[in-house]
Amino acid sequence: MLIDVHAHFLHDRTPRADWRERNASRLRAGERVGITIHVASILGSWGFTSPIYFPSPGDCRYGNDYMLRLQREHPDRIRGYVAVNPNYTDHALGEIRRCLDAGMIGVKLAASRRADDPLLDPVCALAAERGVPVLQHIWQHRRRDYPGQEASDAVELGRLAARHKSVPFILAHIGGGGDWVHTLPAIRGMPNVLVDLSGSGVDGGMLEACIEAVGVERLLWGCDLTIETGWAKLRYLEHILPAADLDLVRWRNAARIFPPGAFPSD
Amino acid sequence: MRTDVNAFLGSYPFRRVPGTSPEALLAAMDRTGIDEAWVSHLPGIFWRDPAAGNPWLVETARQHPRLRPVLAMHPEIAGWETVLRSAADAGAPAVRCDPTFYGIAPAGPSMRALAAACGRAGVALMLAMRLEDGRQRHPNDHAAELPAAAVRALVRADSTVRIIVTHADRPFIEEVHFGSTPDEARRAWWDISWIWGPPEDHLETLLGTVGPARFVFGTGQPLRIPENAVAKLDLLDLAPADRAAVEAGNAAAARGG
Image (tube, rainbow over the protein chains, first blue to last red):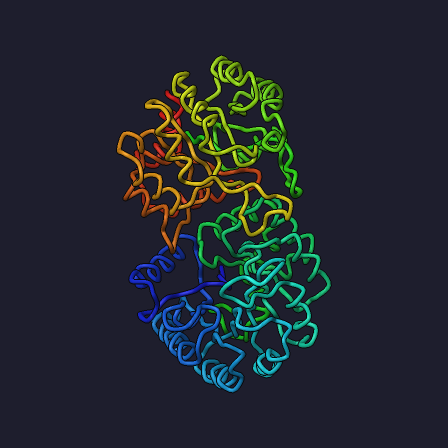
């Protein structure tokens, strides 16, 4: 079994005219790689009617509805994260309840509000109550504010994770931009923070550093926007990990933090 | 046959990178089915005289026949023409120049003179668009990325110069390719190390629009794991002849073989 914990899909109300092709390409490539389940989110309208990382409540709802539709259409291949904007607390909590009730298995927080902001506390309290993980978008070592997002880094996620110790937090795309060398020491002693290996970065030494810093029990496999980099990391891990450890990264760690029964052979 | 045109030996100044020795590179090549690698001296890119790393590189390649030396050239250090001649004598598949790392104008008179000299010598000129993702570079690593305009200017500097660009992404490649005449575009080759696969399918798109003859297999190892370049080819449905061309045949054409 192979679980991609960081996937995305598009829909008809995004800026992309090729949204169908991109969705189909992800599923086609997933078949070739051997991905059993894509755990995916949709960030509102992907910038069409509100910013990608600051989606309006209406766009969140539309994107989540489309994500639920994909999950219904592909019950053997797709699971959903409910994506919310914590600046709209009541809406966010309502969306989380609605979408988890409909079968989604996690919460996606992008970059609408800094990860250590108190506004994220009610969201995480609800994740704890419902027993689901939170996937937090991360800029590895945020040295400043970047346009278009209120990004967070591992130190900021760590502060949130320390306040919600029963919630598994997925630190997004260690290869997704920024300085991962800064990230790993920041979460070394935080057992409820897991590292998602996705992202376009395939730096030599990065995977060994992840293993050394947090151990294979806290690594999750994923692709995000580049499936070839996910496959490359998997192939590399096959050379440096024993089979049992590789299985942890491929799916067993994911099965441990997502709700029971989230995956086929779980 | 699989030729990696974009490999490095030696340490990197801005972070710890494992596997920088010739033996480690050869082991990585064995692991990923790479028969031959064109190797550059990584620390030399950051030296005031990058050519100072060439003797070690040539000697290392002499000891390891699967490694082909890509000699470094600094066109504003006197004697560079001698280095170019020695590259031809050493059987180097290409010479490289990284003007933004050297702090010289990427399309200035000295770079255009170098391109013209490479054309006359029949030696391909290799340029890296970048070495690392700009978002993760060391705070003191300020060298600009190679601009696409520079590649367009250099390919026009001489009617016979052949240029290999590594680490370029789809917008960069399209800007140069479609901003050049067909003859100019036929003298530029692009390594696949930084081109995205599915679901964005940049490589598949480029192979259809620019054509498979323009692309060469490159990894950027050991700064990047070489499995990535292999995986993106394995995700394509390339005809065997096209895949063979990308993996080795086009590199032979780029070096003038």
